Image (cartoon, rainbow, N blue to C red; front, top):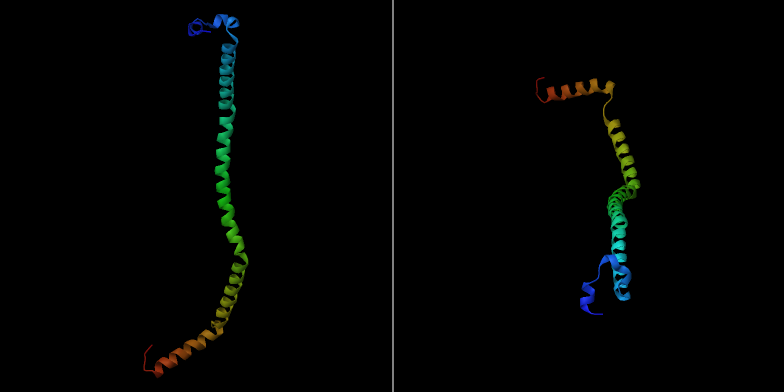
Length: 118
């Protein structure tokens, strides 16, 4: 087969083409169809995969933050109990309503003894 024979090939007479040329043309058509199918199907799947990977990263960060909080939960509960106990102790130290009048009288007497005028 000569190069000039390849120039004379037309799509109207594909049946008369030599077998190697037919095989090459069939391979090119097959690759074009395969490329189109890849572009139609796989590119959409790749986009969905990229979105899923991004969502996984977001969910992983959320999970890690919540896991850190959960790991400290017992320590935080103990700290809360300690704060409640300290607050209760401080509340008990404050004077109640009946003790306030006596406290004011004591403050006034101490002030007068020190020479202060109220």
